[in-house]
Image (cartoon, rainbow, N blue to C red; front, side):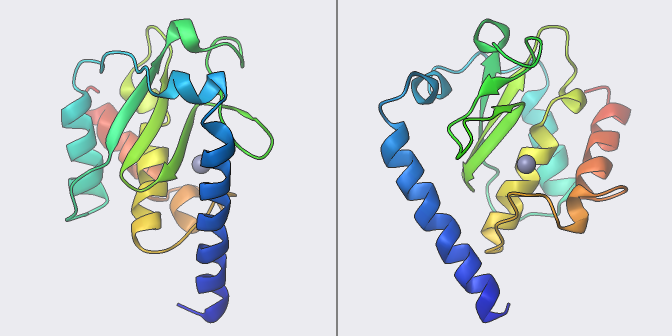
Length: 156
Ligand SMILES: [Zn+2]
């Protein structure tokens, strides 16, 4: 890991902490801690992606699912995350031990951002912040795509 990567990681965490401080008063932030019930097969899905596809040994992150009633952008498929741009997202990951994922009604887990967010968490554990998805894991045929394929094959 180069000094530039280390600085990138340090800057990332400073931004995360600053955002969390600012965010703790916003309605969007509170909604992240009022999660929907986990969908059928979610535990199995997390194990499959985290252990089998990503090969991680650490305990998997907790998953906060955001249910349909709180999805109020992107045609009811996204939520406003506390980000620099207050973006409408299908999922968000600030820390490696918890991911937040939109769960619109009638959606299979492989259609959600679960695998994507778990890959952010896995990279964070390796000290890599990649908020703009520039690493190959997010690209065509990358880890996220492989994980979603594995979920689909498993009927999840
Ligand atoms: Zn992402």
